[in-house]
Length: 469
Image (cartoon, rainbow, N blue to C red; front, side, top):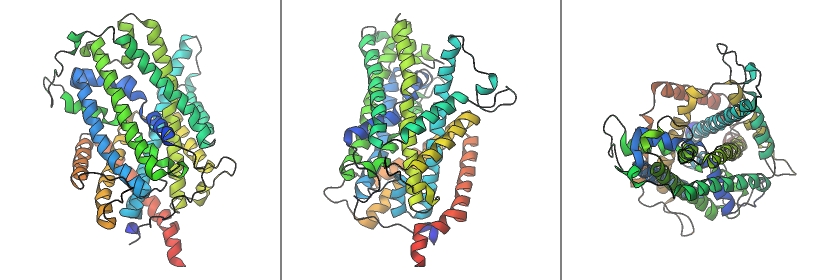
């Protein structure tokens, strides 16, 4: 059956039209740039007040372990199947073409919506700043389509994604240079916050450390609910395997990039959370959208708060850049297999970048960001991600059954199949915590994905073409 046919793992991993010039440092920057966005600057306050209090530090640790388990699977897959496309490519060789396509389809939607939502948030901050200067855009250009409110398009969100698309279409090393400097700025903001905040920590604010217990009390969720909420603040590490055809020695460097970015981000999240709840009582963070800047204002550091706010908004561009880069490489990988139009695999001879895939990814992201209200679709990113993490966990079990244990030079996930089964249980638990409307949009997306596959992909698949001759 076509749906379950698999692709052979290539023996020569050096064969590529793209330019191999990325090292482990570049991958860490790519991963951190994709992960550290609104999560560290917004979600910490909400999660501390609503779920875990100062023990949110433990929530971040638990979430890091859960995400790290999936990171282990990614690392083994990347070292054994170093093919562009990430989970899509891995599952093509293990679970078959149909599951691979559904995984790729869900990832396309996830990346596109994530890029669009970040661009919309960035545009909102910029619009607020312009308003403070007495500059107001026409009402029809201020927000996504809403006849009741008289808005038609979020022009600022579209313009920022136009810039991001043009930048990502440049040669990969050059493109990541801007991303690198912005990531350094993020580290600078966090260092500034920690350096100043450490002199204002009140240990009384950290007691009780676990006010709502481990599994919840007094109507609050507890540490585990906090872990479920902040789990998604780690997503973005999937961007690293997408660079496989542009990495020197990918079998070694991709696992380092995946696991290294998760560990570094976990440490950052835990330090910021501990500092934040030490400076400001956690119950005062309820409803605060900029908790890090709020904490600085609370200790009479308005200048530092302003610097953090402005710079945090600017560095959100790293999320857009990293994720649009990954989305374009995913579309390129799928088109190389024939499941999307052949024109999307065209590589620019000068920059050695898949420009058509990049512009298609950018244009659709611009449309989503500019026209469609994304608040109802926000949880879709979560359910799509959790679904393909389940596929990945199943895939690592099948990989071992089909191809045996990894070689000495390949990364080996410990405790298989116990860890994959644990990962499936965690992802399933988190999926069933989501709303019914999220499940409805998920099923609609799956149906649309099946239609695209059976009407186009299965008929134009490279495997189908090979079987005809």
